[in-house]
Length: 240
Ligand code: B12
Ligand code: SF4
Ligand code: SF4
Image (cartoon, rainbow, N blue to C red; front, side):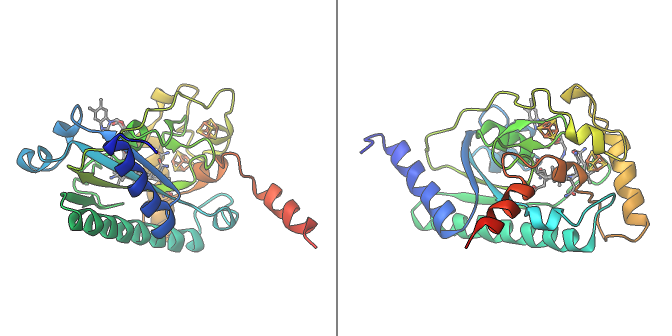
């Protein structure tokens, strides 16, 4: 057994998150270098050296319904995933508190500054540091298995834990998201993502009354990772 207490505690937390809370992705980041950028008071952020990044899969079956615009089925799924993640972050925080450490759950999808479209902190940045994935051409965090098909939440803690290592950029020659984006917001180089074009398209979808939020899902559907809907259907058909 691993004798390093930080590593032992990491495994304990990971097991709780994946097996008890039903989450799909878990990682830990050291946030001492980035916490000054959080929109939280410095006296609060100064208490937390670590962030636990948690991910929950967006189902292929729901994305299947999206063709050229977001659907009401996807809108409902989006809201369900946010509340699932918020609840999981709360449960994890209580679990950590009960073991004598501090834990602060940060909302999955709460905008605190609409003018600049910013939240308390960037779940993507934390997920990237926690080794959950790389920042893809589609400007989303991309995991080798799930692609961009997952949503995120963060729990800050003072529990000293083993930390994960960021993954290298893995989009390679793939350009699927770029080919389908209706706003032309996704470019060859990841850093050239056009935020304004993307937001204008999401606003158009919302104003057309398709869904009650700034959502889209087209680049999420295109970035399915190593699990394809067709493979799951084929496998199911082969079952006796
Ligand atoms: C506001 C918001 C939006 C705005 C856009 C805001 C923007 N300009 O980024 C709108 C409404 C347009 C939007 C759209 C979408 N969003 Co959104 N959004 C958010 C929200 C609530 C806040 C993001 C934020 O604060 N952005 C401000 C900038 C500063 O942060 P950032 O881009 O995350 O940070 C990058 C850099 O700035 C840098 N960085 C950040 N902090 C720091 C600190 C230091 C020191 C350094 C050096 C760098 C650095 O690293 C980050 C990643 O590279 C987050 C939830 C959250 N709290 O993170 C979800 C979130 C990013 N959205 C998400 C999703 C899925 C979407 C949509 C697909 C909509 C949908 N559900 O259908 C589209 C995708 C658009 C796209 N391709 O990028 C997911 C992404 C999941 C993933 N796998 O990556 C998130 C994380 C929500 C969640 N809980 O899962 N979104
Ligand atoms: S959310 Fe929609 S408009 Fe924005 S980059 Fe993705 S596919 Fe393009
Ligand atoms: S669809 Fe391909 S290019 Fe786009 S983010 Fe995913 S892996 Fe990268």
